Image (tube, rainbow over all chains, first blue to last red; front, side, top):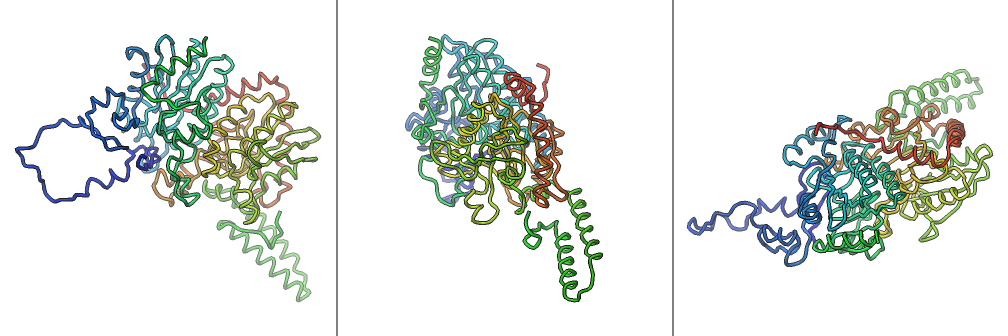
Length: 303
Length: 325
């Protein structure tokens, strides 16, 4: 099982760190550098990667070839929209839409930092412009529009931009009669947008009802993690709700539940398999079969 | 309304408590000494009224939150009792159980049948537990949806009264799909063929509130709040401490005034001087005409028009920049 992670920390706009990585760097078992200089090899940074689930070490290239699924234990590594688009769209060919819609610190919200500063810092760090990217392209023989969240952008938090980009994705779907897929990966609401972020749940649900009337299929793919406003709206409103294996999915985060009931949570609680068991998923899909499965489903909807 | 001697006071209501104590003392003296002190008592009572006015004029956002949680505050069933006739409470989600944190049923409002739905809190420790502090489980949201669908079938308008610190974050709630239940309600409410009015009467926290909060019109009572997270939880996540709730309440802009300015709600409903807990009947009397009048207005439209307007209304919510491509 995965180490417990406080993914809510990401909603504060900082990198979420597991307990292990927080304390690991200063815990030294033996003092001094033990490797002799002669044995030292130059290794470019980021070449190796360790599976957070089984500690299996392999090269990033190897992992990438395996579409970020651990070759040993099958753990689905957390990936971003670029990777999902690469997996799904034919020849990695797609058009990114609505990138011009950007977050704004309308409320002048300041916690430990101002929202504006957080946004600017995040934009400086990455070329991702907000917590969801929308793209249109072909998945096998089907023209589709896909919205995919990026957890690296303030924890994939749901704010006005996500709401508006999805709304426009729905408009694109309607105009082109293209099925919609949303890949969820979010810790929840963007609190710096206060009630505006809450109202995105209603906004997007209203737009989805237009897809219903037009009989255009909408699939929600839940990946690790999918929480809060995501599961309380479009994440659970797919014609089909599917998930990657082992993904943590729920309304309230595990930390909050633990504090409420004052008990430890059972193993596997809120994982995809748990949701499937309780009847809230249509099926669980391995990332390697994702494209095939999506294409087959769209064929079935159309046929 | 609680008897004067059973009243509970928030910190910033202390000056009123002191006046009450003085009045009580004077009354006892008057009784003992048989001296007529009614003039002094009346003066003090006027001061109470003045204090009630004064206090609510300069409330901080956090004080509004406190007022919305005032232990003497009227809850959903109280409003139904004071505003409606022939209320028949209906129970259960036809699936798992009856959720005591969510109540509802048919009633008449000025002779017109309506479906009243809302979260219910308890007035004392025992009842608070029974009502789960107004935190509904998935079956509560499904019960609400069942009642809404029933109202839709018989073409009766729906009025929801929102008062919740949030949907219940429990293990069973997750097992039974808390997220799905709320999502389904939001989606279905958007498509209801009958008029829907939602009123935040106390706490409006997050998805738990929005789960019965999608309507043609959304109102807030003067001393209520509505936002994406409670100030306490916001403080714990963004400030990494429970101590910044006052600051969080300010930053979240959760007051009715703010929400109205932002265009996220349609109207603010006034409360009795000092808050709804001072006079339940008056509180209901201030809300009722607003509901009656709004229903009349909503009945002018066809159901298709109402649904289309609803989608546009919520569709406009949000703020962003559009940068040149």
